[in-house]
Image 1 (cartoon, rainbow, N blue to C red):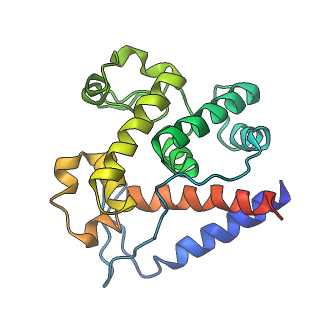
Image 2 (image 1 turned 180 degrees about the vertical axis):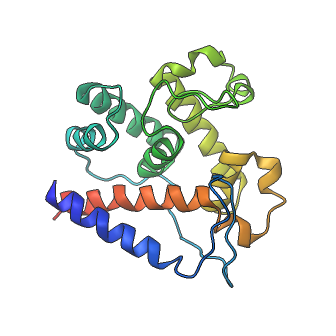
Length: 207
């Protein structure tokens, strides 16, 4: 727990240093900042075959986010997420970072535009994957659809940041944006911060 806390703080300091002097434009997750040069994060989108401590991860998630799932249920869900990540060649920690950003691990999350569940799946997305939107409150169904969609976007776009903007705002919008918007959008910053925290936990567990 101490290692997690220390490394989480360090990662937050590191990511904050990228944005010193940056001006944020409101609370919208799509708001854009205007630094002189876009900050590229070099995030890894593909699957990394690494040792994982699902139970410890589940304990940390439950402790931090006070989710409506038990530690045991989170642990089994993480095992499933890892399997989906490997199947669709998506970074396991990236999926967790998207879940954290989208819903803070609340399986009953519902946005004002009716995006549902852990990965905030819209009705159109559920339909694309031939799944009833009403099933998006099932965490396993939600993660399945969300991971398949994220995998599809990672293949369509040149880097993780653009794929994330496409996930948040839609592929049509992502294709029109300039690098300054993509690499410095609040959504990308949030996902990157969570990703760094999860990667810091991996480092701590391997010390």
